[in-house]
Figure 1 (cartoon, rainbow, N blue to C red):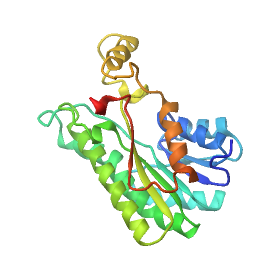
Figure 2: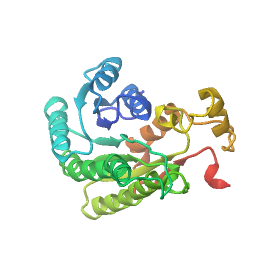
Figure 3: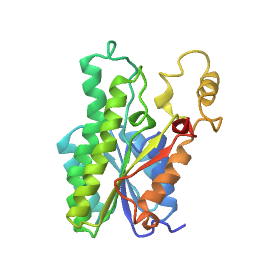
Figure 4: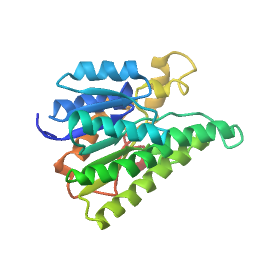
Length: 252
């Protein structure tokens, strides 16, 4: 129950899905938590469920000023920052011909620009407080492309390499900050809704599970436990790496 004891963590996209599960798991393992989301009601609900002084922050991850305000709140209310989990994300279906420029820019703003802004502004804060860990949520789609996810593939592949750049920079500066990316395949969250439009949700999940060697889709807890490891000192020799949680898809 103390794998991240004494650490203070900010989790973006913490109102629901992987972000919510991650915030809850990190808190259960001893961290003090700041939950941020553009959905303030959802962020407050997560913080209330955690208790123990967890705070909720209204946060537009695509806006640089909002990042400054969020990090200021973390420092003022919790004192320090040791862990940043960039969890906020969206997905839009579309081939290269179907994807509009508006959708392209929106997906990249939420899925990639947000991580650039988060790392840019959190790195000096984490370094000032003695170092820590940054965990960026990418996707198996950042490694294996799909014809119908042009914007999402591009953004998540960008997250993968941006993570490596941040890791190398922090190592060179001797900041004691590690930066790694997590690459889930299908996880049972609202982000699958567009993919599961045909038939019932149960039927859709079964179709997706048939593509996974382990025979099921992921759960939010599957991903949250991986983030706990990367946030903890257990992973102190791991940086600039990707943790793939895809049920074996990439092994095929």
